[in-house]
Image: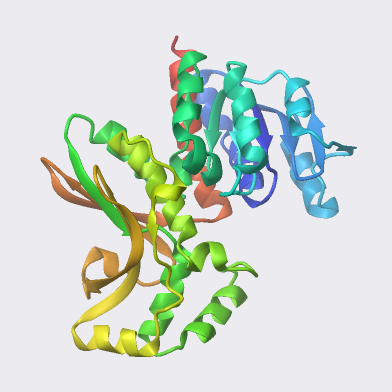
Length: 333
């Protein structure tokens, strides 16, 4: 199985590290190891049809900030020059245009390649088109890590809970916002909590994408389409972020035995992200940076899952589950 990794940043390196460390697993399960035959970062690329030396690749990135010695201006041309089976697309999310990730995914699916992505932009903007492209070219298109990172939810809903109707899903889908609101629970003002989130590495220098609810909105769109069979995009979400939450609101909630959490909610008819009052002790009152989702099912009632929504190896774990699913299917054909 030949892999091409587009986006050799934090997550891409985590994927390479995981493949490197799981050599025995792949050989025992399939009788062969996975080969990473190509990788790109924002400016450079590396190719080897016999498989890149992942230790060397990781060391090169660490010491030079480049994945390879060759520069490029068009990543699709790099993909076209490589023979691979699965594209792992982990370039940065762009919710305005889909970014380079959209073009990468379209190229791979259009040329009969299976795709794994955690890139929310293409999924939030062009889900139906991409799924139709995958179907017409008999490709597998998987994206477990795009919602909640290591928190298992898409495959859980579509595989383990298959055969029963899922009524709704609501959850905490952004660890940055949850960290800020958790700090506000203990009396910190919003700006101080945001500053601390940046210092801890939980928030970007420009936190707009998180605190305005856009990241959570992308995730509820993906759930709406993949779990509920809807055909919606980012523009269809009713979004309210957390910037208007102040100390008075937090104190009022506390006096009623509640906390405020940014909740994404999706069902056959609902698609929204907004701050909600959650009773203390409820699974969605969770503090810290974890993502948590409550799945309301027809037969099993409420099922709650949680996990790290970001992180190098945490997100790589979701990618690994998708890769194993693809290999089980392809090598069993």
